[in-house]
Length: 137
Image 1 (cartoon, rainbow, N blue to C red):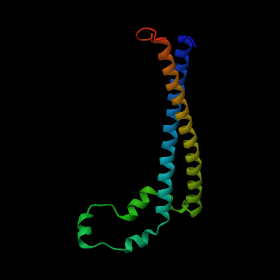
Image 2: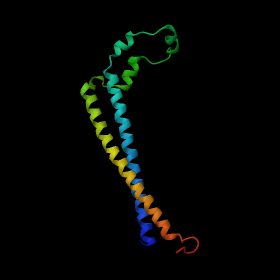
Image 3: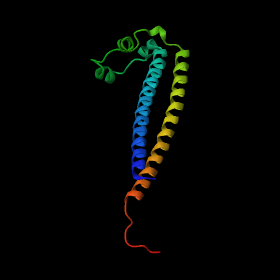
Image 4: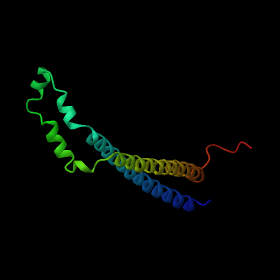
């Protein structure tokens, strides 16, 4: 294969690899958000009043003197507390499973393109590098 064709192939593979890596980063970002939202929904389903009734010993009360209360935190994190249901958790788990599947496919594609690029770079190097020494026929 001519050197110019190999150079074009390597350039194309680098471009594809960069795009795949960008998509993989985007998918991972969305997965982190979905997982965080699922954690928030699960925490929201916890009984805040029960958490407040657990009480704290004196040392913890001293440490938490300026800390926001559970009710303040709940109000800030979940302004619409009525929206969390066990079905919300299931929906988020399903969404995360689909994102995981897509992430796996994108990762596999990245591995494949990287392998193709490495082979093309090796072929390009063999074609463009003159043999060392003489013929040992």
